[in-house]
Length: 141
Image 1: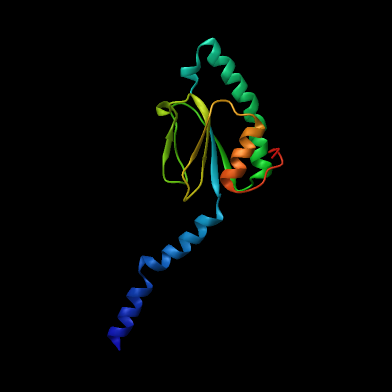
Image 2: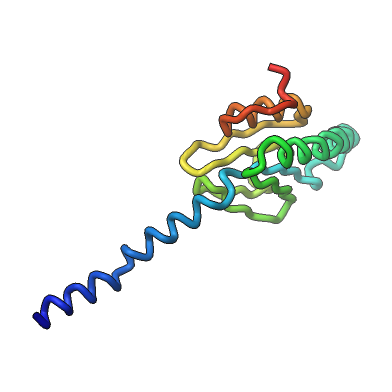
């Protein structure tokens, strides 16, 4: 009888019981991440500055789309020298990225999607709607 109580006590204290509660908490958070990234150091020439200005213009509109149409998606802005861990298990470092600017869409269990260069609000909305499997009012399709 003592042995049975000891076995039951050990089984109830194992980490398996705690893993189930942690798993439930993680799904209640965001369902994905949209990251806008740019490297100002590599965009120092006149063409790069024009491209960066266009990127920042559309970024404001894209942030509003993410907030309105994708409420469970976290929007982040990543600059040179910052490292960001994505929900898909990978990390993003702007200094090592081949395009100087763009967007990354990431979700747990999916391969991330890279949008290179300046994106209009409609381009981003359609790509995000397809990736996160939701509709967006900003996507004309």
